Length: 102
Image (tube, rainbow, N blue to C red; front, side, top):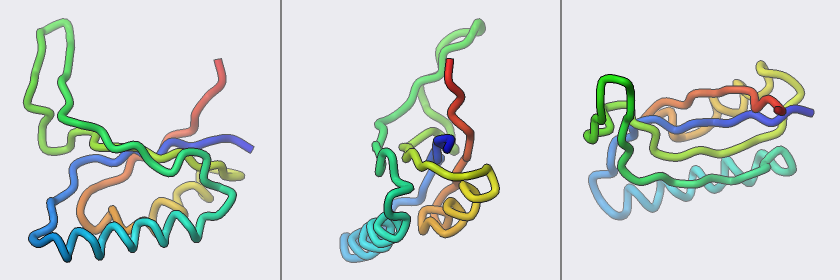
């Protein structure tokens, strides 16, 4: 079964610590509900920097990569269903891609 990366982009900051705790609990429940499909539950990322032939951009932009999870699924459609149920989509966006073997 292939693995899929769920890349978290952006994400509004909670207005209160209580709101943040409530959102985090919903995210943990979502992960728990995925069961054995979870390969890597999540890795948060710090501020990103973009490097290109044109130079270096340090502001990360509004849709900067803020973290990722890895899940195992039978198909892209199944991985997308998992992603659509993630509470993060209420505050940011998720990018889903199959992880290819080299």
